[in-house]
Each structure stands twice: as structure tokens, then as C-alpha cells.
Length: 465
Figure 1 (cartoon, one colour):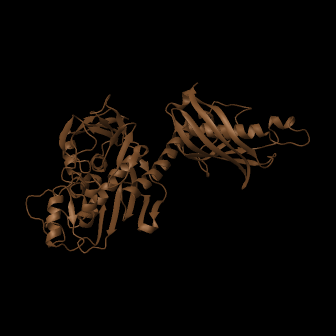
Figure 2: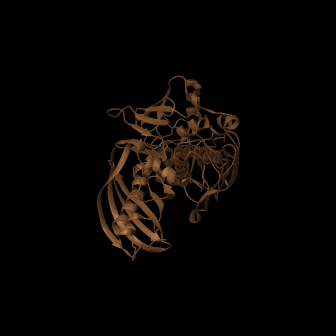
């Protein structure tokens, strides 16, 4: 069954105070065309700059996920994006008149309600799902963080936390259907923190807009009257502050018996939205936070981008332990015989690295003269083949790659370690060091088997053909 992309019918807005910055802000959701994706727009800044909601623009993860492009920054986007993801919206413009969305009650539900006021509509274009077809994992052993993603025919989450605190302890939750469970069973779950963190966070200026109406404060230590009085000042409360019988400051009732772990699942949904495509897979997470969520999202986005490259250039799934064959390479690279010097792309991590293969045979035309009776691959052609692999990586970082070409501007630090002979198989490993304004720096290594035969540093620019 074809599932179509979605946006909203009309604009809808809400206003409030930002959790960490304490700013007064209005958020406005607006419809967007097919293929737009989700973009934040800072209408308070000159020329209303956009910040795409994707993993490449994550710049901060302290107590929330922060995005930035150029001078435009947006703090604490995870609850907004969780609402968008939970309602399975694909294309949306999110206007903000300040640096951070309102925190409202500390959950994703107010954003869900605003979006539902706008009305969700289908668009005449199928969704591009990211179907997980192999196990993917991320862990931080020192912090006990473990996340595993396994194949599934739909998006599912199983989540567990185990804090050493009797008010929270070990909690577990499972989401098996966004359509049936997200709005009522997960979106209302509020953010939480431990009492021992509150004063430290306030002193660091991280929760300027936080209060007992926007978070659950879990008491993880005993309090005397002096501390209670101080907390009253911290939260700017006119009423009493007291240690609740349920282990929560001021005895605030929970919306669910396991509300904290449900909120952790909501945060995970929001952070995984940054991949750029809805997932068909089952995520099993233990003790994860924003940093681990985003690290997993980066890993998954790399796999997704590799799949996209395969689908775009190979036309269909190909077997073997490589990404693209020579036919697909020729769809991207402008080079042709006798100067196309890479035969396969073994692996690619867009914007980061590429591994390419060159089969060196006695039929290479240059062996006729280099040298008769003692054939050796010219060093300049080894460097050229390395540069072509780098060019492939570079062209996959820009839009409309079919109309672009990579010009190499400089090559430094070239070293040849061993002759390359007929019958050898060259493996090139290129890593992108920097990429600014269509100019890229890369480091390259060439191997025959495990033997390093050549290394170089290169600079290139992307230009129109």
C-alpha cells in the first residue's frame, strides 16, 4: 500500500516561554510543498533564515537538541519534532519569532494540539521510508547506554530506564503504533529532572524558563526547611514547596505510572526525526539521552544516504560487498576510457569518506610505454585515480551532482611507498577534512592488500560543467 506524504491544511500558532532561554516566543506551523521536509524559520532575524531539521545541523545536546545554520539557531527542538514525527507529517514550515520554542507543560502534546488545529492533509507523493534491513547498534559502556535497531514492518520503540532512585527506579514502555498510541499515550508525557540537578542548572542559566508547571521534579535527596525556602526562590513560587509523598516535588500527580520513561521515548522519536525519513524498524533503547539518540541518528542517516545513492544510480539493489559498480559510477563521474580509473565504490559515508577500487590489469594502455618489459603503474595515475575517488565523494555532497564536476586545485604531501604492478587491486580510502563554499580538503590513502602504496592530501572545488 502506498502511503502519501503529509502536511497541514492551514497555519496554526501557539505562544509561551522557552525552557532553557526563558524567552517569550510564538511558534507557527505552516503548510509546505511536497519534498520540502521540515524547516525552522527565524522570522525575528534579518531575511528570515531557515534551519533545516536534520542531523547535519545539530550543534548542541545539553539538556536538549539545538540546531543551527549560519547565524540562525533554534534551541530545544525535540518536543516539536516529536509531535511532527508522531503525527507523521513530512513537509512543514515552522516559524519562530525567537531562539527557542515554548516549553508549554513540558510535553509534546501542546504541539500536537496546535498541529491538529491546522488539520493534517495528504499530498500526492509517496513517503520515502527508511526500511531497516540489518541490525544497527550504538552503546556507551561507561554510561550503560545501549540502543539497538532491528528490522520491522513498522516503527516501534521499546525503552527502559533504571535510575537509582526509589521515586523513579526501573521503568519500561513500549510503543507499537504511532497512529493508535502516540497522541494519547505518549505525547502528554512531561519532561523531568532530579532535584539535585535543579539549582546547578539554574546557576548555569540552562533552565531560565523552567518551573513546576513545565517539568516533573523528582526528589533524590532529603530536604530541610532552609533548602525548601531556597527552592521556593529558585522557582519563583508564591506557595509552599514540599517533598511529596510520591517522591515528586509538591506531590504533583503523574499522568502515567511510567511517565518519565514515556517522555524519554518521546525525546527519542523527536531526535530520530533528524534522520530525514520515517523509519520502518524497531528501536530498543536503554538509558539513552539526547547525545546517544543523535549519535544513533547520525549512524542511521549515513546508512540511509548510502541506500539513496544505490537507488539513484544503481537503479536496483545490487549484490556483493560494494555500493556501486562501474555502470553506476559512469552516471556520476564525467571521465571515460581511457581515463576512468575507478571500477567500484566499496563504501561511502556522505560528507565524510569513500572507499573505491581499481583493478590494475596488463591491458591498461599506459603499460605499453611505462615500462616495456617492466610494467609499473605511473605514480601520477595512482594519484589521479585517488583524486577521482575523492571527486566521487565530493559530488555526493552537493545538489544537482549530474551538472557538476570536481576540479582539483592542489595536491600536497604525496608519497609513493611501493610500485603498483599488473594484477594488483588498488583500494583508495578518502576522508573529507573540510568543506566550505564548494571547496574541499581531503586526505587519501592507496593500498594493495594491506600494504600502503601511496598517500596524499588534496584540495578540490565543485564547479558547473
